[in-house]
Length: 383
Image (cartoon, one colour):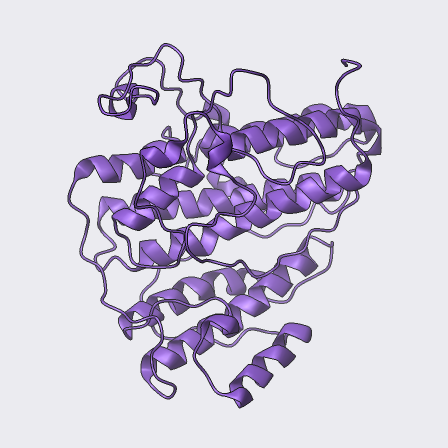
């Protein structure tokens, strides 16, 4: 270790690990809402985006397992979706700034459109080259890319390897990753560091890795940026490592997340989506569907917090399956999905109801509405 390398404290690493959980969890409603806005679930776009949703759920599990190994019980706070803000990422730190390629990107919940797809691509953007090694300063709160963020976390995790304890490990996706031999941490101390690195490798291989743009063709309109279209046709494009590929139901199991999203932009024609309004009137079917989604997403967040704290959660699988139906019900009833009661235009009485729900969620979950939706893939097993 270089004497100039900043020394991490356990509290600083835990803060970064909670941020990792926050960021991975943030992507799930963002991607999932766009997927279920597609009217025809037979569309390749639906299948590609849903495959990313399922892998992001895996990433949440892996990040939470690492957090638990370093003594942090992760919390699942309600994500915020507004403007162009993506938590813990600041693309202005990249030189060149990738927002030049995706000027229409939005971070708000909405139908699948070019604004959402460009936002997806920014989240998963794999190219960064600051001209120097990753700045692993533990005081930094934001990074230029998720890949850079995880490289910094790896520095802190390595320094603090003696703190690793194999506790509260969850493995809920084994049926879909036959070649993923060790998705949990089973060894303590320095012996567990290779397992921590393996979980980070799975996350960055599937979606948020870092590729140096050196040697790639320059973009015809932006010479400082890579020509992404030609990149996907070159040998420089690394597929997801074989051990981290979905072996069950992914239509493009070797494609990283960025490639899946960018392929939809390149396709030119997006599938038909539901028309919807963000603030349907209280008492309408759309408003009722939003209420049900907010209620069940609140319970799901609490279920996740309990699950990764090593507690038994009644009907945990039902929580995940239900959200898909709730999101689809919003679109089918003309409402943009809402995941927080703060995003609804409702009465003081309803606000009070949800304030109480946030402080003391009720189990088990209510039954899902009758809406066609693909279930999330999971077999909840606590190691």
